[in-house]
Amino acid sequence: MPADEYHHELVRGQLVSEPPPGGRHGRVASRINFELHKAAVDSGFIVLTCDAGFILHRSPDTVRAPDIALVSRERYLALEDESKLIPGAPDLAVEVLSPGNTRAEMHEKVADYLAAGTAMVWVADPQNEVVVTYRDILAPRTLAGLDMLTAGGLLRGFRVAVSKLFAL
Image (cartoon, helix red, strand yellow):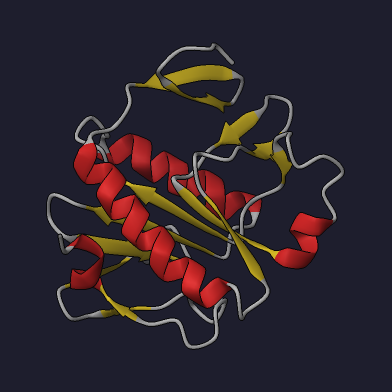
């Protein structure tokens, strides 16, 4: 991958680059990370940020780097080298929309995660203050305001009001 300020992913063998996101993106991603981390410690999961790369498909390769990922502690400890890309999909992938993201590219990311075995994908939209959850690409669920976001059984007892994720 190029060493520059852009965010890079490999999609079916093609390099895809995005400019760095803004402050709102970072604030929302940080809040989601905080809320997930509190529950992950007691549930046997590791929370990864900073665009940890996951090899979702081979030949041609697809490497996705969600804003936040949840991986079972057992699977993470079995990695041969934690400094390298992680083989397979995260258990939960979280993408926070940036102003430049399109619906088509986000739909493609969600489809890639689910096809590779991710149990659940969240797409957080800071502009509209909603989170769309996916267990199936054809059955998204949109949550807003006081709707409670859960991790679909991955994290015992994890519940947070969507509005809390976007609060200053």
